[in-house]
Length: 211
Image (cartoon, rainbow, N blue to C red; front, side, top):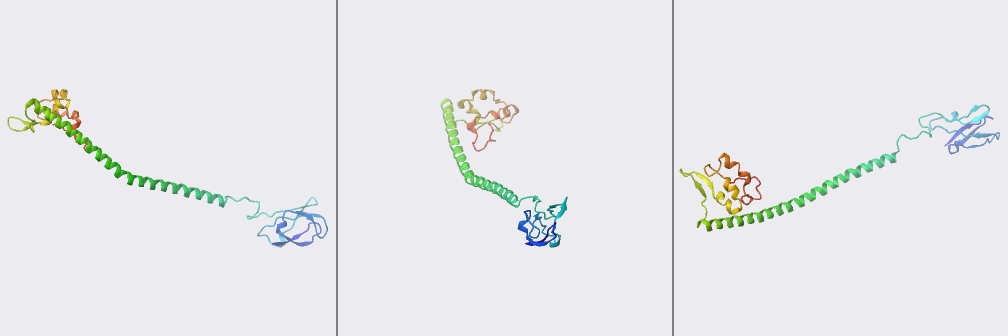
């Protein structure tokens, strides 16, 4: 935009386009070298003059908030890049969560079925061991063990599982079992953690009852 410029030597006023700001050249009137000052956007045309300093023409740049030499506090492009990176990070977390949820939804039923199949297989193995122990007991006593051993009053004292202990490789546990006390007597209850694993259901880890 053309603005009024006054030569500091001959005081001749001319119109100078702002694209020549900061350039030096001869005055069109007196021919002396002059430097076109930087015009502020908010400055009126009649204020675009130069100051004399020691007889030399010195370009003056008005101080204003819109000074072209002032560096911007922050770059819009930089702010845009930071925002883009933040969005990418959030999107990455969301994608990871979605993938994790999908794997859990697909994998959990598979793991559950595999665990159930393994439990069934272990239960079958346990039953075969118990059946072999029953047959071994019957071979020695010509009969299978009773469901329980009762006291003189007919109250159940011990179950068949205690009688099978020697045939399951638990002779030492059988010898420490006190048949003078009921199955829930203090001494016999202390032996429950040593219950043979074949008596426990693979899906019930709390099944520790020995008798």
